[in-house]
Image 1: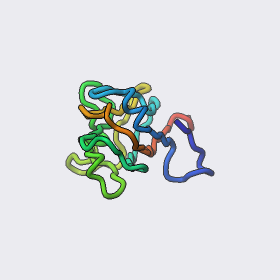
Image 2: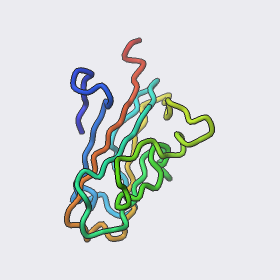
Image 3: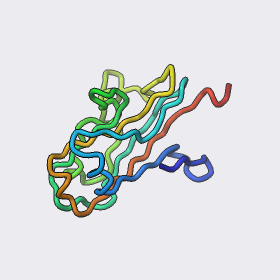
Length: 142
C-alpha cells in the first residue's frame, strides 16, 4: 500500500494493488484491510481498475466498504471480469438518495475492507487490480 503526498498525486491519498496471487491468498469469501479512514475523516472516492486482465477465472466479484458482514458502502458487487473501464463509487453509500460526496464519516479509526467472491479464484493464472482511494483526514489540521 502506498501513501501518497499531494505533490505526488492530487487525486488519491492511497493506492493499493492486488495480483491474482494475493487475491488467491485472501480466498473466496475472504477480506483484507486496504486502508484506514482516520477518526474525524471520511472518503470521497474509490476507483477500481483491472490493470492486468484476469485469466483462469470469469467470476471475480469484489466489494469495498467498512461493514465487516457486508463491506459494500464504496464498491458493491463489482464484476471485475465484466469491466470495460475503471469503475468509481458504485457502493451503497454513494448510490443512496442525494449521492453524497463525502461518505464513511468515522468517529474512530475505521478499516476499509476488500472482499473477494470467486469460487474459481484458485484457478487464476494472471490478473491485477489497482484501487485508488481519496481519504479525507480533517483532524490532521486540528
